[in-house]
Length: 241
Image 1 (cartoon, one colour):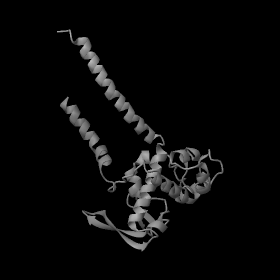
Image 2: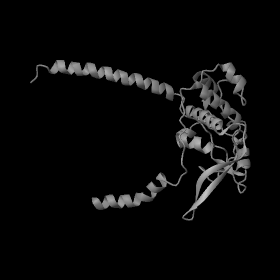
Image 3: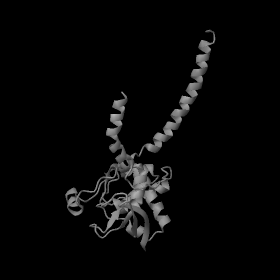
Image 4: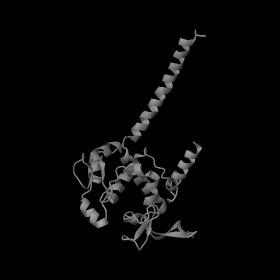
């Protein structure tokens, strides 16, 4: 039996090593899905900077209006650019064939990207673009090396270069250095990306806040039920020795 366990661990070691290491350090997103103002700002960033290429085809505009505390008229005037029907999903106007021709592959739908990657990954990725003239769009990414996506938030963030150090023959990222400032300070940009990440997390599971609120009531019910069940058990068994 011991030999089988050792053999399994030896076979799984390379896989576990790939899963555990090799990636860039991820910063904590620290999003607050209860902050509707943050979600509204994130929605604005999404439709202005992401929705031209990336759809969120499982999210409806009218559902977003209800969940984010906005009126349907506000959504129509400020967040709907690809349709005039409030019940439509967040699709893009660009055809997949054109996207594949321009970018090499069609940009993915972002409906469940935070569930696939995690909010910390998205938050760090969006802040980790750096200048790289060898790439088609002139930028690369520390979290996603050789990324095929341009830095769509560069006007807000500015341009930065990545500083790498050589460790045992491997190039290891050390820090970013700002080259050209954007319209936002680094602190403001981090806050904007946090808002965008929060919105993408909401889109990945719009019901999650309601689910968590319901979960609290379920736990309270179980706690109260346990008290009555325990008292009933004592009453039934009080004469049993």
